[in-house]
Length: 357
Image (tube, rainbow, N blue to C red; front, side, top):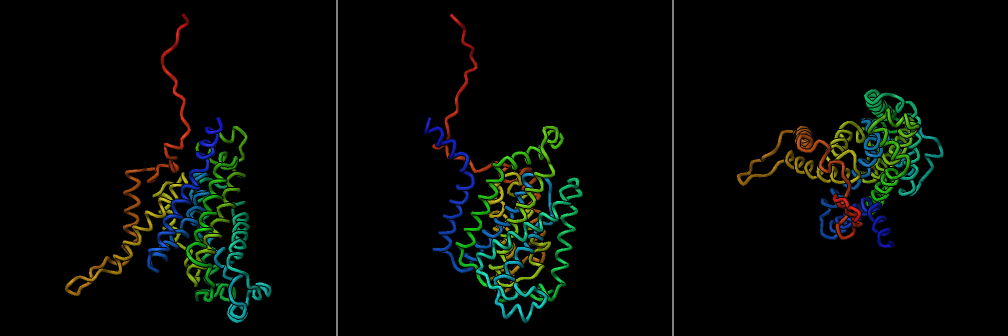
């Protein structure tokens, strides 16, 4: 009996900790054996997992596609930059910031939590209106929110620097700093998924009318998921800004939104495992295409290169190809399977009926 309880517990927590353990092994290998370029590439994958997890918390559990979540990453990225940048630089270049922000110089890791809080507040304000809308209307409204945020941040010169990039953003740390926040994002997503809020939200995703008939407040469940996903997006935006070292509003705009949605759909929008699989698969394909656009030198000295812009086109074709063969993504909505040795034995019910003698 004790052994069965242990196996049941292992089945419950296997997905997040199995994914984290697998990513930890790869991260360790990359740190020990990889070049600086490979380490940067893998660090960006870890950050993308945070961002796609933010998309997944709302989209995967509610079934409502939201196109504006990159705006919360933008909010988080700028909040983290404002709090951690050199005070002298802010007083000279960002004169529109409040005095206490100009003089603040917060540790990068602490500013990540401030970015999460700011993004969560923004998600609460926006989500209180958006999640009341129907599925299609909500998707369009989130896209409109992304446009508004981008225009404001791109033109508010005294606060964001406008079109000029913010510089002097400190580093969060090495590859393991990004890994820690990535692991935290996966755990948060899994805890929500297993909570009563996540279960009720997925019930409304599968049959909204039946869920409402049982007393589930679809609006409230969607709002909780929207705020939580906004907080995780703020975390991803903050970590990404520290990774880049410079920041503009266009970093968190259309190209990033398209890429993150492709990763979510290709991996499987209804599973946390799909998040990791989609990010790794699409990142690798995208990197190969990027190198193809840069070109390969031929022995005769000529350059063989893909036309510029082919990266997005071929990514779209790759997504269509995957969905034609696997409509629910690579994982088909399934989570990481527990090894057979650790599975709880299933009781076998015989189809034969016993007759009394």
